[in-house]
Amino acid sequence: MRAARRSTAKAIRGLAIPAFGALIAEPLFLLADSAIVGHLGVPQLAGVGLAATVLQTVVGLMVFLAYSTTPAVARLLGAGRHAEALAVGRDGLWLAAFLGVLVSVVGILAGGHLLRGMGAQGEVLTYAQEYFLISLAGIPAMLLVMAAMGVLRGLQDTKTPLIVATAGFGVNIVMNFVFVYGFDLSVGGAAAGTVIAQWGMAAVYLVIVARAARHFEVGMRPNLAGIKAVSKVGSWLMLRTLSLRAAILMTVVVVTAQGPTNLAAHQLAMTLFSFLAFALDALAIAAQALIGKELGAGNASQVRLLTRTMTRWGLGFGVLTGAGIAALSGVVGWAFTTDPGVHAALMAALLVMAVGQPLAGYVFVLDGVLIGAGDARYLALAGLANLVVYLPLLFWVAQMSLGDTVPGLFWVWAAFSVGYMGARGLTLGLRARTGRWMQLGVTGSHG
Image 1 (cartoon, rainbow, N blue to C red):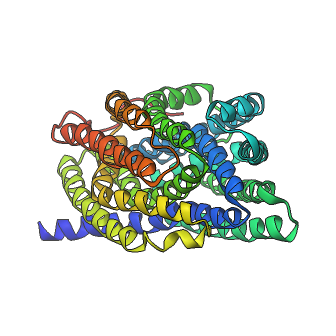
Image 2: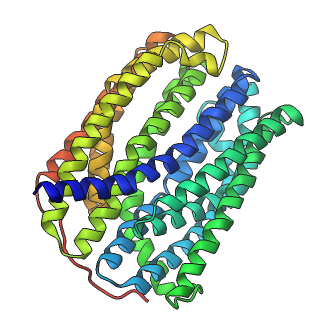
Image 3: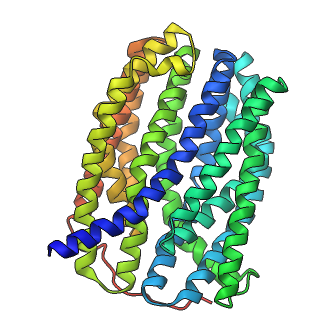
C-alpha cells in the first residue's frame, strides 16, 4: 500500500509541478503587466482591469476547449487508443479556431456596450476600450493555445506547456515594457505585446500537435462529427464556466459602482487571486489527466487513491498560499501603485482572500477530479446553485452603499471568498462522497 501511495504521489508531482509553472506563467505576466500599467495612473489601471475582466470572462467561457479534451484524450490514452486521442485533439483545435474568430467579431461589435454596461465612463472607459479592441486580435490564438494545452495534458505531458508558457510570457513582459514606455503607446502597447506573444505561442503548439498527429497517421483536416462531439461534451462545461464567470463579472459590477479606487484595488486583488488560483489549479490539472487515464484503464481503486491524495494536498497547499498572501498583504501594493487609497483597500481584500485559501485549494482539486471523470452535467447544475447562493450576498453588499471605501471592498471579498467559495466546496464535497461520478472505460469511436 505504501508503494502504491509513493507511486501515486510521484505521478501527481510529475504532472502538477510542471503544470504549476505553466499555469502561474500567465498570472505572473498579468502581475507584471498590472505593474507596468499601474504606474501610468489609476484611470489606466482601472480601465485595463475592467477590459481584462470582460476579456477573461469571454475567454473563460471557452475553457471547455481544454477541460473537455484533457479527460477525453486521457481516457483514450489509458485504453491504448492513441490515434483516436490525437483525433479528439485535432477536432478541439478546429473548434477553437472557429470560436476564436466568432468571439473576436462579436467583441468588435459589442465591446463598447459591454464596458459601458459595467459602469465605465470618462477616462476609465477610454482606456478600457483601447485595451479591449486591440486585445481582440489575440482571441483566436488564446483559444488555440487553450485547446492545445488540453491535448498535451491528456497525453500526460505538462512539461511542454511549461516551456512554451515561460518563453511566451517572458517575451511578452519585455515587449509590453518597451511598447508602453519605450514607444509611449500607453495601455494599447500592453495589449499589442500580449497579442503578438499569444500568436507566437499558438504557432508553436500547432506544430507540436501536427507532428504528433502525423506520427500516429492522423490527418489534420477537420472532422465535422468529431467537432460536434467536442461541442456536445463541452456544452455542460460551458454552462458550469458561465456560472463562475457570472459570479466574477457581477462582483466587478458591484465594485465599479463603489468607485475607481476600489476598482483599481479589486483588479490587483483579483490578479493575485488568479495567480493563487492557477497555482492551486496545478493539482486540478493533474487530477483531470490522471483521473481520466485511470478511468479509461478501468482502475477504480487508483482513482479513489488519487482523489484522496490530491484533496489532502489541495488543503495543505491552500494553507501555505494563505499564509504567504497574509504576510505580504501590507506591502504588495507598492509594486503596482503609489496611491495610498488603493493600498488600504487592497490590504483588506488580501486578508480576506488569505483566510479563504484552504477552502479554495479544496474546491479547485475536487473540481479537477470531477472534470477528469467527465461529470460535466453535475458541475453545471451545481454551478447554477452556487450562483443562487452568491448573488443575494452580493446584492446585500451593494445595498450597504459603502462607496469607495476600505469596508466596501472588504465585504465584497468576504462574500466572494467565504460565501461563494463555501457554496462551491459544499456542492463538490457532497458529490465526491458518492461513487456516481466514476464511469470506467471508454465508449464509442473517435475518428
